[in-house]
Image (cartoon, rainbow, N blue to C red; front, side, top):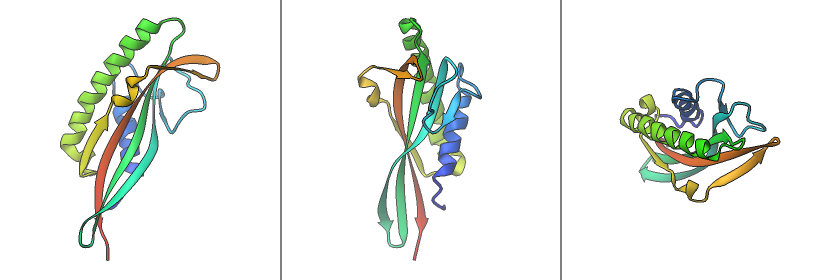
Length: 145
């Protein structure tokens, strides 16, 4: 398997576009300068770690940052329940991605939802958004030498 940073990024965008309540046009690749729809998500590159698995085999763990965003507009309770539903749907989708190795793109898929421990409301281009961060980690390996 070749190391491919862009393929899991694109796959996560596709997964997010398939979640109920998001859809195409509401998912951004990279951190958006402004967020248009009321409910949106984005995927950005995170860090990468490399380990030598065995002689001539390199394993890489790549992290992808997924942000869920809801334009609050005075509807804090709706923001929370909407994001709660998206998180459940995303975790179910990630379980499927784990089973298939993201369609054969990666060796393994894992995730961390604990970054949302501190609720965050953030102004983005003049609107207040409820943001919920998630980390998705994938491993790939390649041979060298």
